[in-house]
Image 1 (cartoon, rainbow, N blue to C red):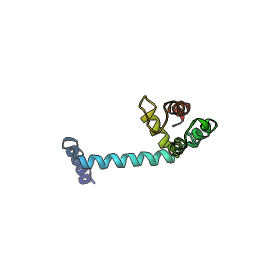
Image 2 (tube, helix red, strand yellow):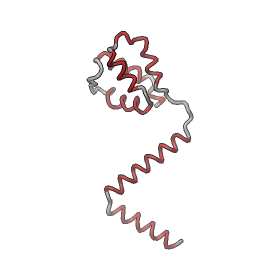
Image 3 (spheres, rainbow, N blue to C red):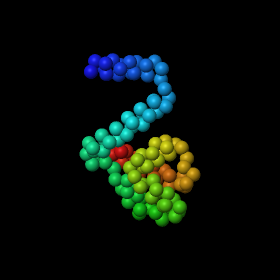
Image 4 (tube, rainbow, N blue to C red):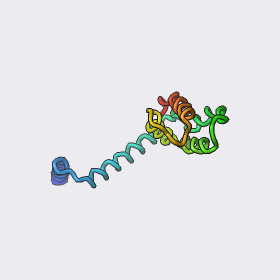
Length: 117
């Protein structure tokens, strides 16, 4: 047991002072996976349903082109894709797949639910 502890401490010190990019990447991937599993296991289910944004915008679909509606379906297919779109395009960056007015409308609708991400 003592030898195992010494080995773990030695490995930790070695990796701290001589970082390995591949090992660091693997560690970050494993950490992200573990955090996702814990998040799913402890989820309170008080989260944003991704189709809620689609349903809120349904009454305004006459202002959207068919291609924009299909793209909106892709965006609202999962909570992570909604969050990713919000962080990428609702901070002033232009999305070429939406008309400017429609992009603002989508971002305004998503911003109503940012607390539920």
